[in-house]
Image 1 (cartoon, rainbow, N blue to C red):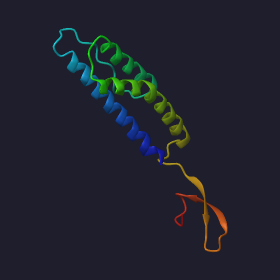
Image 2 (cartoon, rainbow, N blue to C red):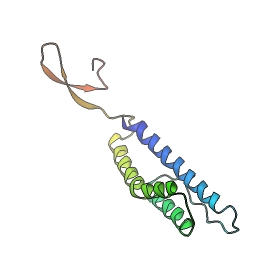
Image 3 (tube, one colour):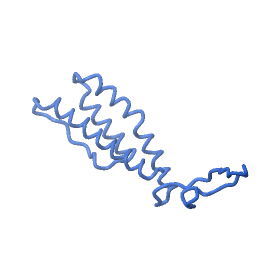
Image 4 (spheres, rainbow, N blue to C red):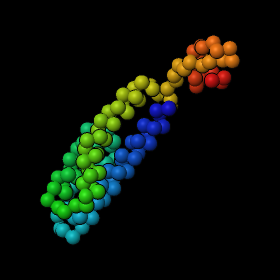
Amino acid sequence: MWGKAITVSRERIGRQLKELWSYVEEVYQDEEQQPNTPDIEKIDPEAVEQTIREINEALREKEIDPKVKQKLHYARKNWPGKLREDEQKEKLLAGRKSRTSMLYRTDALRASERKLCGILPAC
């Protein structure tokens, strides 16, 4: 359940960071001095915090679109925490693609029993 969601979440954050950096390049396209390109390929909480900080510094004295400003604020507040949660979930998965959970299953006689869903075909 978590394995694919973690991968998709990281890809989405990486894609959005690239979009934000392309906006910075658009803003600086007429000027001679452009900010240094951050390392966007590494998607971990510290790298994302650093990249967002660099984007904020690059756009500090510029007129920027309110939607971009809002996205940067959201990214600064939420993405590093989300990535930390995903790292913890990956540790719990320990190489598996999904977690198995114990669910109560009620049969026709209303007798509840626990089954490992995801492992047993009857679940």
